[in-house]
Amino acid sequence: MTSRNIANLVLLAAIWGSSFLLMRVSVPEFGAAPMMFFRVLLAGLALLPFVFIQKRQGVMLSKAKEMTIVGLFNSALPFSLIAFSTLYVTAGFASVLNAATPMCAAVIAFVWLGHRLTMLAVLGLLVGFIGVIILVWDKLELTGQLSESSLATSLAIAAGLAGAFSYGIAANYTKQHLAGVDPMVSTVASQLTAAVILLPFTVYWWPETIPSFEAWRNVLILALLCTGFAQILYFRLIESAGAANATTVTFLIPVFGLLWGGLILDESLEPRTLLACVVILLGTGLTTGLIRRRKLAS
Image (cartoon, rainbow, N blue to C red):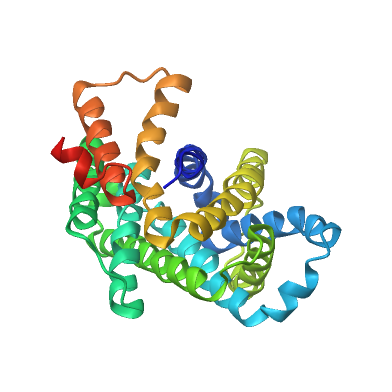
């Protein structure tokens, strides 16, 4: 990966690191599907004028089928599944489940596309995931009330892992079928198609009580920053660095979740936290090729 790709990877992790906190706070008011509907709808509408300014609407129409598939597997399905999981597990737990994305993407690329996995890349995936587990170990406990519902907890865990698998499918599909497509076009089309997919579920599960101003504000942040802008970065990374490398961003997301907690909420950083961050960065470096075999041998 180039230095620019690494910088975009870190920036993307910093942005997405805040999304789990926003969902954890506001999904109980909206419900998973309605909140994610507004997330993708507002993101798509906010960026749509740029597609017309660049005169790229023809590309959207010519790739409508591909964009719909990406909208389903990269936004509608995983967003809703992960949002649902935050109803029953902590934000830290949800980020652990999401951290399975690179492994899912790598395995899918190996099975589906025949991509070769080096031993160094496999080692990096394992090291990165171990680092995430260390990082959020003390945050994996559920509240007493929720832990009594083993069925809901099991469903939440299954939903989070299914969301990670969905991201893995979308990353590889994007690399295979949307190579060369402007990231802005991919972002807008996939978000709008995701909104269409989520619309009937939103109507069915619309909350009886109107969400608060704070909840709507969080949706707006999710839409414009954590979805619209972040998705452009993500598709750009897939295009230039590959699906497996781009999905390693999920290893860094919990790191930034704790960093924002320290800076904004004045939470202390324990030695274990610092160790976990080092392990995660090592795993990401191995997987992306930033740390190469010849460097390890020197």
